[in-house]
Image (cartoon, rainbow, N blue to C red; front, side, top):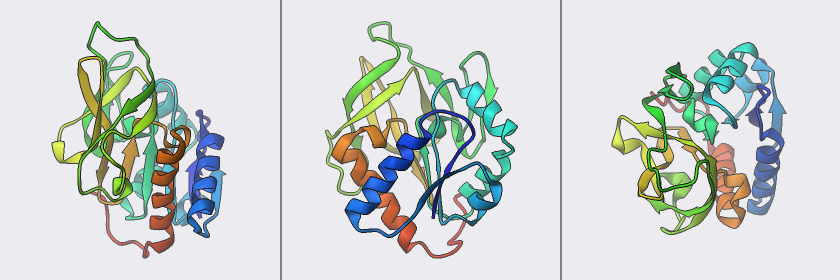
Length: 219
C-alpha cells in the first residue's frame, strides 16, 4: 500500500488519483490510500507527502496532525518516499517564507523566494526539465520534458548531488526535483503533468511493488 499523508493540506485526492491511474497503466497491483493514521503510514510499503500553500502552514498542520515524527521515520526507513511541491520543500532545513521557518531537516539546504524581477510570481505553468543522470524515478525522462509548476519559492540544496533535475524561470535556474537514497521529491506536480508526470508516478509504483523491507535509511 502507498500511503498519501493526509495532514489537512491541499492536493491529496489529486495525488492519490494520479498514483492510482499510473499504477493501473503500469500494471502494478498496489493500493493507494489517503490516510491521517500514523499506524497506516508506519505499515505502508511507500509514503507520499503532498503539500500546497505556505511552508510554515504546512509544518504547523503536520505537527497538529501528530504526523511529523512518523513522516521523518518513513523517510529514514528505506521505503520509497515521494514529496510533491511543498511536500518537497519541507524536507529541507528551513524556509525564508514569512521569516525563518524550520523544516523537517531531512535534506540539507533552504527554501527561498524567486529573486528575479523579470518574472511573474507565482511561477505557474509548464516548464522544461534539465534532467541529471542517476535518479531512477527520472530514468527515461528526456531532457526538455515539460512538467507543471505552481510555486513562488524553491529549494536551494546545500549539496549539489541531491539535484535530480533543474528548470528555469526567467533568469533563475532552480531545483525542480531532488533525491537521495529512497527519498525523491518534485517541485512540480507529477499528477498534473500529463503523460510525463504519470510515468514518474508509475516508476514510483513499480519501486513500491519491488521494494524489499527496510533496505536502509536515506540519511
